[in-house]
Image (cartoon, rainbow, N blue to C red; front, side, top):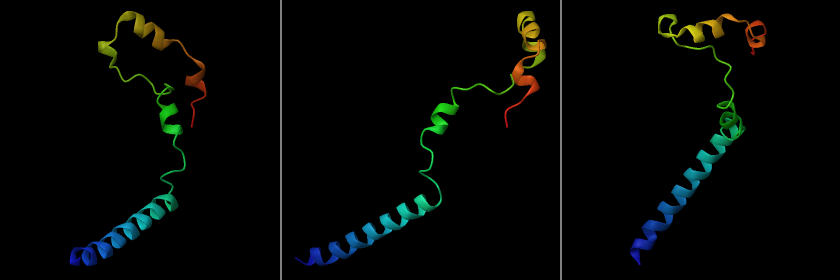
Length: 75
């Protein structure tokens, strides 16, 4: 019976800590956008990171042609 007298306050402290941490996460925007990062990985807006000396001639020709994304970069 004495273990209950110890476990009940410990449980209440852990629950209070969980509520505080959850409210902190909500206030700091941790749960604002759950789908954005998952969809962002599908869009390839970055320039190629392959060095010029490692590219084949077909890749060099493709990179030399201007595209719409080169003229109007997304911010």
